[in-house]
Length: 278
Image (tube, rainbow, N blue to C red; front, side):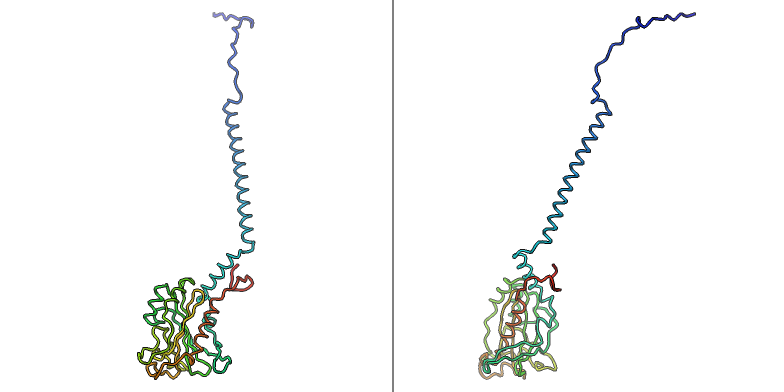
């Protein structure tokens, strides 16, 4: 029989107290503090993103709704001019009628359009010598149409040469040989020049390259406008007995100038019409 001794409380060995425990260092407390810190950081970053986004949206709204600057208007107008040869219908580039003034009568007459050439390639539209000059400066296209003066005795082919910008057009324009009437002794016609465009069944049905007797050139914006003229009866330049002054073909440079002016005249953007996207 075993005996268990019972000791009164006063005789139990005393419990030695351990070091004090810091509540902040307890694992659960540490994790809670870190979670709160990351939450604060996330809230701050979220607020920053909201502020940046609001500022960006405000700036975009202000930029889209502000009035354009003068520089922006000029750039838009220049770009619109450079696109006209593609954006405008052919009948707008070459109107059905163009006016010209006569020196002998002192009154205005009208040249009627006989037809528009469908092709726009540079090389077939001009003589080879002129084509080399245009190609050198980046010719993009040549648009052609033929007119007859009011008496239908003179036929004029008008050509619009398209370049990338006004500077390229100006360089090409300065290299084009000066316009001179035909010299019968040489029997060369007017070379190099815009090639004649004949249209069967019209007053210009007989107008071909051999019948060219006069040529002119003009410039407007990124366009060089050329003309070549001759008699509607198709008589070759070699049949001319003497050098004829430009009077019979006085309408040609006027037609070219009108076409060049219409194509190159800048217009400020108009958001109310259908030609501008604002």
